[in-house]
Image 1 (cartoon, rainbow, N blue to C red):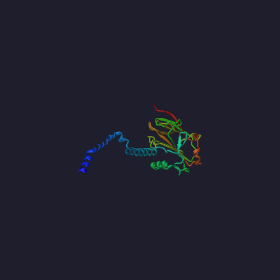
Image 2: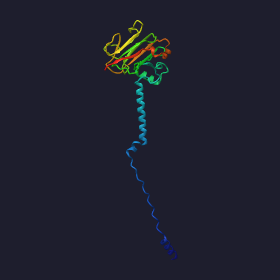
Image 3: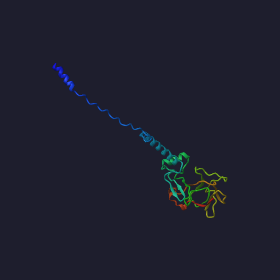
Image 4: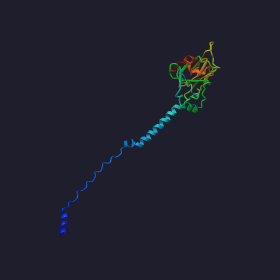
Length: 230
């Protein structure tokens, strides 16, 4: 009896346990459009596409213009001495392969190009020019007018350039080449009515061609602008 009463007293004196508080759930943050745009995956894809676009764009630009490295300017003329040697850079070799050009080796001659006149203004077929009247000592030279794609200009005259063997000279051995859309006396290259163009000059079998880069502007033909159509 005493044991039962003791047990009942223990049970009556026991207090109910305090309720365990439930954890408060954290508010769920919804992902916004900016979160999706600037997620690590999206930024990685964007960086890869940007790098690919810049790489392809720069390669296209480099392969469709002049040689990007190693140029030497002499007055209005520009040349790339290493293009025809084993020192040609990868871009130059890619341009040569794309165009199908056969560059002159150092022992064969020198190739120059001009897209500016003596005053540094771009050559424009809407203007008239006088080219001359000297040329470095060489066995043979050629000069021609080209369009933006590097193709010889086409005209009704059916002439886009001259060689040293056919050029008309004065009594002192000097020459003048007229570039104009309108008829000109003497050595004349007919230009289109308008548009950019360039001149290409090739010098073959120059004495001491290895030192040709030391030539000054006075040893090469000048390109004088005479006037432009209004």
